[in-house]
Image (cartoon, rainbow, N blue to C red):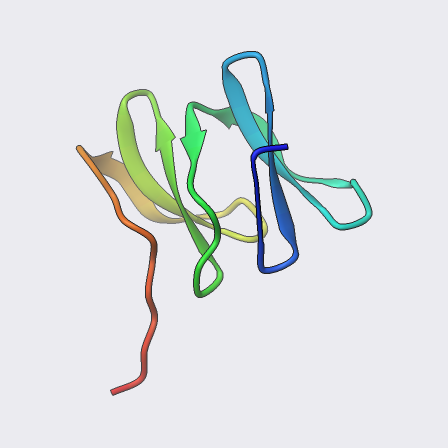
Length: 77
């Protein structure tokens, strides 16, 4: 186990990371180089050397196109 936030546990096996829910069910496959903790429902995630953002279901919300990424923050102005 790597990190826990928003009811999601980031897990690592070998060099790959993914996520499970509190019941231990896989919700995001172990396909990623690195996943940061979830914030506002999204995780900054690294794949093939680039960063993007996944939602809590593993859907790509912001494509893997960036050299670095911070925790996602959603606020209503």
